Image (cartoon, rainbow over all chains, first blue to last red; front, side):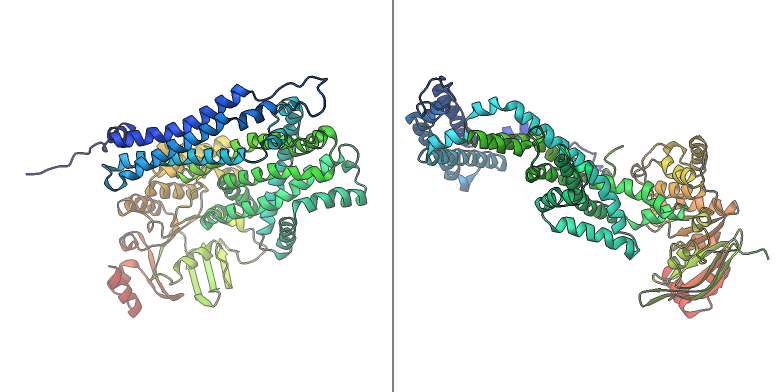
Length: 377
Length: 244
């Protein structure tokens, strides 16, 4: 008798299976944990909303009698919020206790995971509530006035948009310049001739070894003035200096990324190309570099994200009003209003730009890891 | 006898302090299928790679079609278009399609127009039985198919000499034959070939001359059947007894 094992579909292990494995105990634990977190968020928003976020002060209000953030302060200090925090801590404690009460006799793996999730969420909610209580015991009024004046962000919104525009222009011009220059630097730094290699290495090490803020100051204050470079003087001068220095700086970092990418290719690629009669430069251009660039897109994007944040250092160049980037805008609003909420506006601007890029890096890395040798095509 | 295509004179090669080729002299004639065998580290691959100067000999001279490749005034790239090489690890260009692998050198080195290069590439792929894979990416092919593309890539340049460097060593056993068959047909068509291999069956059936190397020296040379049947040298004997 012959038995042949026919191929079978793998056993169902999806979400439906996970749900089916749960017990009353695990459901309750998970539910209580989630309840703690939801109570916290819904409660805080509801209470603060009831008191109001900001108020419009009448023009003739005497100095010191009205602050835009007064209702927010009142809400934060209200007894309702205190009660809410303690209730959340209580619910979180219940979730944790429920989980640990049966930790030694869990029915199965899936139920155990659900119960642990409930306990962890409950503890997180309780911890957040604890922070809220601690925060209420400090100078809430001062904090709200200085950091939570959301109305101010609304008033200056166009300025932040202009700042974001400048941040993007500086990043993309500097980034483009740096990534092109960096590729040539990388090729020079790998030359078999020391006389070609050495200057590239010196350049790379210099720009990687000194702070960007020093490079910007030195170029903006020293080089441009001393060299009488027309292109870099006048009203647009500092802006152009900023792009040039950001580009020169990124070139050094991206050169190292390219070099790693090129060196990660198998030697056989170059040999196969050469054996077909391609010259060294042709082999580099048509075989090695196209492959290396695909491999270094994620780390190169990383360098670009760093550059986006580093554009904030151009403040040392003293840009004109309309040329200010995100941090410059925040700084200026702060110095004219003495309100630090402006900093939050800058931070929000940076996050809106950088978070999608960070996501992109993760996505590209996963695509490259999944065995596809080419990102494009 | 006709003029040799390749002549190696007094080739010495050191990797650091390691003396991998010791005063090797060799001539290769048209229509020959020269098989190089020997234990690993014997220098057979290095010898093969000095023929197209992927390894530069430390001492000695390499001649190809009468031109001295070791002379710095010789256009090495032009000489290389006339000899194809196939590698153990295929070395296909993963960022180009199968056809793109073939057309690259046709366009950039031989200066063929896009359409003409395409036609020659497709024609060559047909010869190795892979016309239907023209638009595929190398990563979508089996090892044997990849190696046949690599052979087609070299043949598309219409070389007068083909160098094979252990081209079946990285293949799964069931894929070896399809590659050997392509090589066998190529030999039957009269291509001059130098083959470094561990496939003794191929060496015996297809090879016209066999060279056994050990420690950077050509120890024994002759008609494959005779060397296999009657090895003169002790080292050859023990090597063959281990491998056959």
